[in-house]
Length: 414
Image (tube, rainbow, N blue to C red; front, side, top):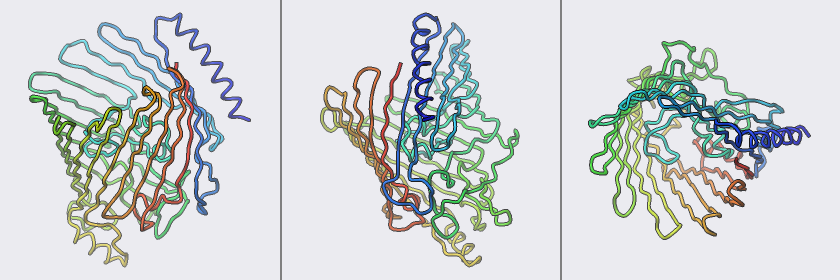
């Protein structure tokens, strides 16, 4: 009943916004979305098979001047799963470009870089994995942070520097909506983590230098902060911790073999455990990515990626785990193969897509089939699934097998 009332008021506001948009010098855009999703398999660790039943009203405002641009995007959501109405700020920024070669963007914003498709190497900006695994719109995978971004453009290349004054973690699987692998088995209990104090000492620093040389896009990256998920554990408190992290990386992208090739690499320097001897903290890792995208035939595009992680000081890790009487569950090498297929039908109003992950090392997988139909320029409907599986319950996707779900979405944009 509450969700119907919220939808009614959202529709009324939508009508008001459309009238206002026609009469105000400030452009007003947005959308109204209804999402519903439910598990397809029984999950004894969770109290409710419904993962998502919500209405979201998005309002987007933008105003440009000669020296600045102002942007505001926010979501009003009634979430029937949580029995809660909330407001989520997606973007509120001031973008200053008084000088031709420099730009300064300040405020709450969604930031991203790197070459991966749903795989991230040097992109250490926050991600929302809950939204991704229950298939809210793909834009919600990339979460906002309150940051200051400085950009400088020259013939030598483009420099981007980002300061996030307080650490912003990923929205990770913690027992809310999804069960996961805990200490010894699958659980739906809430996972508690110690988030670093919101002080300037715990700020995050991101950097990128990019250069295009004859169609070859080259970039160097740097990051100083913390692992974005609690990949450490405090045994005294029984809580997760975010180990300190520095990342150094590079990427290239270019047209080749009739398509687009991308290569990216990043070294994750675990600053709290550089020798790998602390069993409660994440070791240093090399992450590498190779990808290729091509339109095979008209309206059919295929994209392939190979992603690998190589744990450093693996022998030290196994010895430290065995010393506390535990079994070393992590492999030295972890990898994913991803495949994206996109087919456009009926004058591109019908979109059939599949995105899949498969790990040869861990023998687990994740499939994301999706069908989207554009009924008009403003209205579209979608239906899809999130299918998880694996040989072992402790692997990244294997732990989510009982969270396999089906969902549907209808969106009206204005």
